[in-house]
Amino acid sequence: MGHSHHGHDHSHGSATRAFAAVTLINLAYTALEAGYGFYTDSLALLSDAVHNLGDVLGLGLAWAAAALAKRPTTASHTYGWRRATLLSPLANSLLLMAFSGALAWEAVRRFSAPPQIPAMPVVVVAAIGIAINLGAAWFVRDGHAHDLNKRGAFLHLVADAAVSLAAVLAGLGMLAFGWAWLDPLTALLIGVVIAIGTFGLLRDSFNAAMDAVPANIDQAEVAAFLSARPGVAAVHHLHIWPLGAGEIALTAHLVRPDDSEHDAFIDATAHALDDRFGINHATLQIERGRCGHDLHDAAPHAH
Image 1 (cartoon, rainbow, N blue to C red):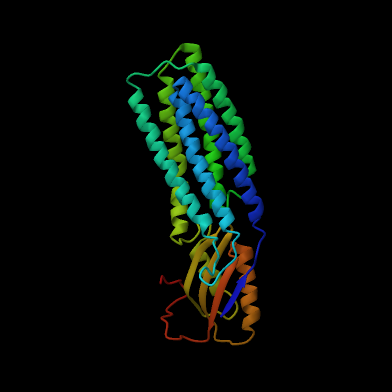
Image 2 (cartoon, one colour; image 1 turned 180 degrees about the vertical axis):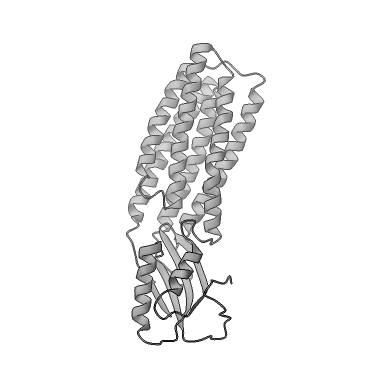
């Protein structure tokens, strides 16, 4: 059996610092927004503040996950704590879904008698929120497309900026036309936008937590690639799953009757899996014959 882990610089230290910075920045802004929300009785500001509080909790989870991922392996945690970066976005997305439902419920309740809201404080505070959230998103932008933990934080912050923009527009509408119903309408739209934007993260993070094959990898293509390697007669027990942020694991049994140069074959195959598919933690077992397994074809079997 051969094992190869082609390490990459995942910059866990910089990720931890970025999460710490954006968490503290958002916590300070949430307190400011909530204070003005209570002062003006604006549901748009309060709902955004509640959403931001959820984001602070979510960002705190991402911060903790990035810190846990740096911990070394132990006898009881042989992969270390990398999986925390997969569980964090799952909890993150569940929090967002819960908050979006609460915002929508309160907004619907207020439609019957929307209070008069001083519009200018809503515009000013929400405009500050746009700048803060876009700046914080810039901190965690690197690698967010391939790191669920960073993606969860990035989506939170971009969604917050959009939510703050909606609050600014609502404040301008109330200022220009006196439309008090714009405040609960904005809160309702905020809840809907959060729910829609979070669904993809919830699906992807749940699949990752359940060891699903990463969405950017075609298992059949990997099986065909392994089957076409020199001397390989069959492939079985093929499993592909995410280990953590930026790390994908694979295990497979390869039937290879020619018993020469297996070490060089395993090393070359592991490098090829990394280069072609981004699978950087491959464990390959070489078998010379059937070994009691059913090998009707080269397709992977689920076990």
